[in-house]
Length: 57
Image 1 (cartoon, rainbow, N blue to C red):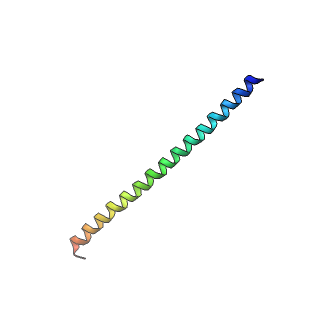
Image 2: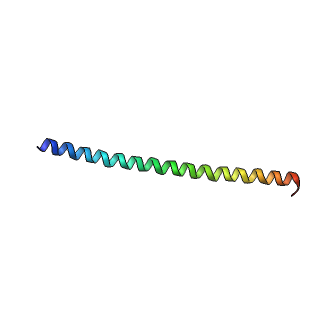
Image 3: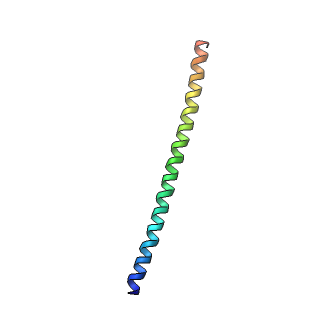
C-alpha cells in the first residue's frame, strides 16, 4: 500500500513539473513572437521612411 502511495505521489510531482515546463515554453513562444512583431514593425517603418524620402513626400 505504501509503495502505491509513493508511486502516486511521484506521478503527481512529475505532472506538476511537466505543467510548469509547458507554461514556460508557452511564455517563451509568446515572448519570441512579440519580439518578432516589434522587430518587423521597426524594419517596416524604416522601409516606409526610405520610400517616402525616395518620392519626396
